[in-house]
Length: 499
Image (tube, rainbow, N blue to C red; front, top):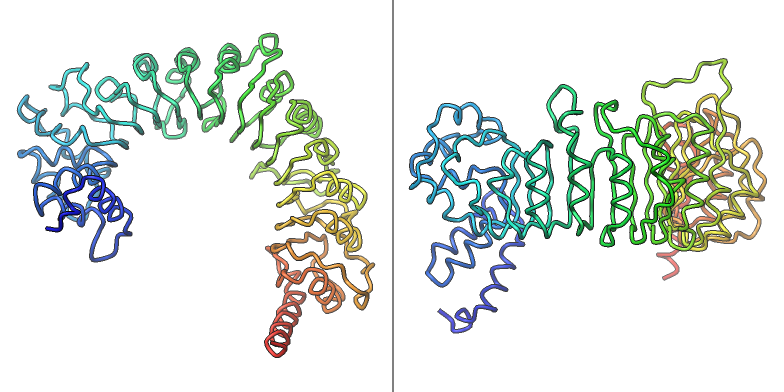
């Protein structure tokens, strides 16, 4: 053996590299590490540490128990998750001696994911035992919390919530990331299980990332005082109707000084969340996401206005708003509601990404508004405006207005906007002002077939040399794209001949 392998730092570096080698059909990374562990005593400890760093389910640990080994590894072609309940319910709990076998490698585990919910095999292990002393990331049901919780835990993903949450937040004093997934709960109302949620979260005073269902007014206020909190995600999940109501008089003058990312997902009624935003300040906010079912235009405009007033004008870089109800359809005779979000967002001078998806409303945009937006957002990289597309007025953005606005945003890489192509208001033979950063272009029109396809393709090719096709879900742009393909090929041949 080479003397360099006796240096621990060198050995760890080599093994860390082995751990990054992708698994193949014939050799997996785990098999490589297991082979190294069997090579010699010097290799054993570092190889085993890497082999056991991340574990899915308790199957590998239970497989270390002599009595259970044939049951665990005799399930050829079957997964532990599918078969745990079927065989574990008929198996005797571990004895004291078998508990030691179960825990022989548990101290090596840093990341643990458990989705099964039948801990009866582990009854012999004392509730105060720290089975996983080096654990840093945990994903599981609260059924196992009393058994597993180490003080070193930094990340936890909970699949259910019950009374065990109290011991969880009081013991895990180093917890920095907490994610709770309400949709993972099997049928029935979630109100009972989520009832301790708000009461317990306020104990987590070192949180950096929190993702959970709706919170009550008191917890919103408590979270505003957590100085370490950087990322907050409210995921209402399913069903929508089981969440605490917010008291408007308690949500006043909240200041989340350090939050950089704020996200609201799968909201049914966004009114209460809009109230929170109206009465809060986020002076460090960089990213805002809002996803809800249909909002009436008044509520949507209230959201846009509240966001513009949250003191993030100099920091906000990304806005993504999606208002979508998959069961909603416009009646033929119904007037489409018009939204005007763009004027509210002109104050965000650091904006790099704006994504507006309102599938049951019409987002108003014209040439002047688009130019004003581009001049207000000098760093814009992605602009996507996508509305219902059906039963909406024709876009007020012309081809000339589009290219004029593009000249104001040299860093734009991705663009999706509605456009009016009733007339081609650019001379295809005029000297173009090329925009060389744009790579992805999606233009929405209200017509099923585009006239003057060849002329339009020549203009796009000349002004946007890095765009080789217009992205679109329907076939209205097929003819334009065929011409663009030919023009791109001809340009490539010309460059090759010139060189």
